[in-house]
Length: 155
Image 1: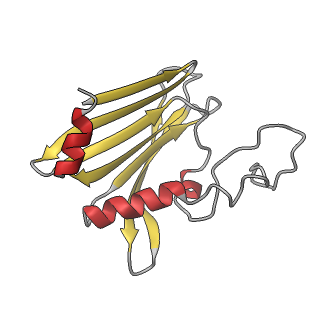
Image 2: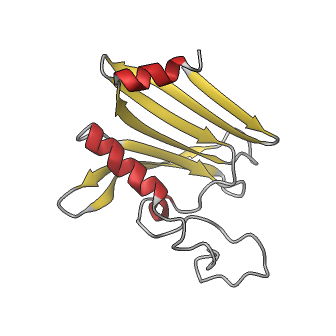
Image 3: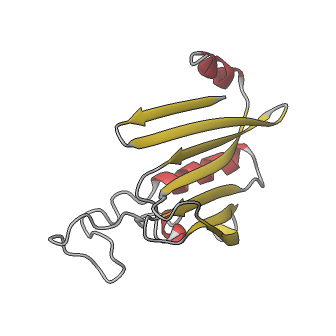
């Protein structure tokens, strides 16, 4: 199952792949600006947003102080919730900025003892096109009657 949204130049794609009878892998992919550091996006209250202009005051990591800390919980909560639904599953994040020669890919699990999201695998994948950018997040979710009914609205 594929849902695609094309908003001008920004494209968002959602793929659903059946992993088993009761589990789907949901992958959301966009062609946005990408992330410089994947670890920042899985640390609560930490932002992966880059500064948008030279006028804004930024910290030494190049992040806009106006967004840092304000948007740093969404992806972390998504990963925590997905792993609560499918215990011991991994989540994958792949991202690249236009300036980077490669995509960064990392797999994460929830470390319940340490109360954090932990990286268990990292790799760099060469880009097909130099200017390619974007992010992809993939998690496992259980198939429920409600989810089946919701997805049927699109087909």
